[in-house]
Image 1 (cartoon, helix red, strand yellow):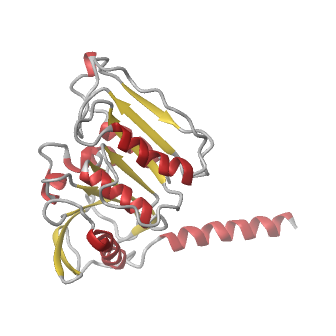
Image 2: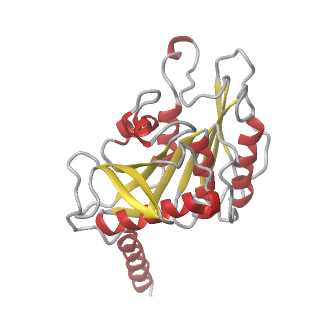
Image 3: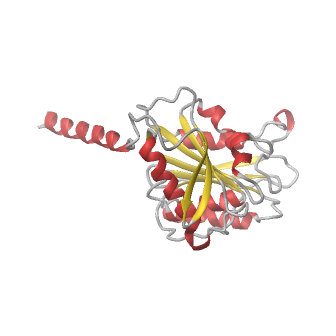
Length: 280
């Protein structure tokens, strides 16, 4: 009886792993390509950049990570770097274990009017799932400012399609249709943010503290002038639905740095990669 039960559990696990792989596994991409791609969404031409890992293997189900730009930024700013490292510094840490996508917002923003930006993400998912080998249980979105707001909106509306999101210095400006599904959530915000106050960041965070069944608390935050950041990992959250919150001494920036000998080393990339890599 125990052997039979073990076989059933093993079969169930293997089946779960098989169905996590998208239809694109084993295929040679013909409609999507590394670099700039275009889709028509709601009658509008929308662009997005696809960044494949070195030596892409079409039989290996990769993580899929979206990097979402800020207000007055573009998809090339995220994909190519400049103000930030490409994709907020995550690819260099992921070490070719993830596929990255940077979509372009309308009018250099993410107003998500009528849910049209959510539709864009749905359509990109469909396009890459059909052509590339992706683990559909390991989709993530990361973004700063307006990109953080859009990542939060994705968590609200596409929570069943995304494993987790990271919102840096965001606010509820891209909407939150739905907003009841538990989704792994990483929030980061400066205590002196002069564009989107940390009160808004706490509001986004607390949506998923509730949804994920975490134990409510008031996380410690650094004092002004300390140059410090404090990471809080909420207790009591549902399995695989953690909430991490980093408050830092600083203003509205995607690349805050610490004090002392680490002053020139941002903790954003390493922090969010630690969050993402826990999901296997």
